Image (cartoon, rainbow, N blue to C red; front, side, top):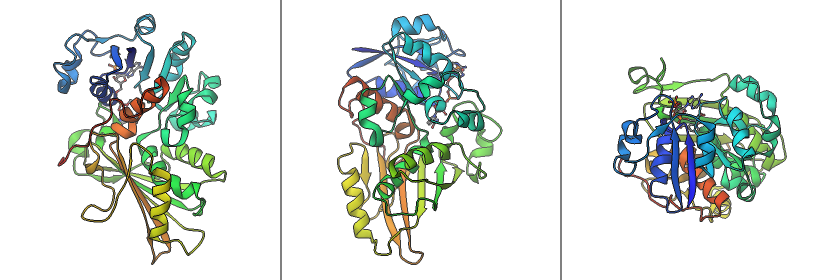
Length: 351
Ligand SMILES: NC(=O)c1ccc[n+]([C@@H]2O[C@H](COP(=O)([O-])OP(=O)(O)OC[C@H]3O[C@@H](n4cnc5c(N)ncnc54)[C@H](OP(=O)(O)O)[C@@H]3O)[C@@H](O)[C@H]2O)c1
């Protein structure tokens, strides 16, 4: 039984981790931190977890306690926290799965630009493995530090991988429109995320540039070996969970058709445990409401003949494949378990 520590366990991704790991057969959560709720039972905040966690209480963030109680640690903290604590955990032989952005980017300058902090562990940035199993499964297997992707970056990259890998689109002309639910912003309300301000909205934000575009371009450039440029515009919508990426790109050859796209996606994703390709019928395009509560990502790509473009889509639950679910998938790979361990359950329906 591996011992798991969760730093930042009172938030939304922390709650999802606790939910998933409560039935994981090979690990036990032994420490879960929250400075605000230290000393209170887990179920005081995560009411859905009553009964499973009667004995575990939130702890303060104490390095000594984390080191003595865990083999592997999830960092569920806001940007700018993990890059200070993670080096101490690694130095003491622990593995770290970081859900925050602190080790996702390879160019150090970008942390200052997009997240507003000077990186304190530049040597670890190059060692961290980007935690998207569909791209980096083998590196994750041997990683001490996994930097899990952002939720909107996950949906976007998964929608585009087959097109970029097959080199069939113009990588300098990709337009991405993401719709995302309010839980993306974490549990602390602000003026824009407070329920009366956020419910029922369809609101573009960070139109001038959203931070997730950096990791999207970084990862797609890696697989294409070309420069990739993405116009990326997220939209806040009234849902609580879900991230839907709709990506518009332009094929290099006119001959591409739906049948070829079906084959390309089936070849690329056929063996992936958490990717499902949408077929025909009533629900033929990805919709987050079909994956909520699960680690699945639904994808599809179609040709729009009129505009000679390809529309590729991916729907995920931002708190599952977009964060906690994907983090557990990475943990399973790091610890040598089957990837679906603890994650093998279907989505909720209806939602
Ligand atoms: N929400 C999503 O859909 C999503 C998806 C992908 C990635 N992420 C990333 O995952 C991370 C966590 O997101 P979240 O939505 O779970 O956030 P959240 O709901 O705001 O929770 C943040 C957690 O971090 C703790 N915390 C805050 N400041 C801290 C500090 N200085 N030191 C130690 N603990 C601290 C908080 O508890 P206390 O303040 O009580 O200690 C809380 O438990 C963020 O970096 C976010 O960008 C989120």
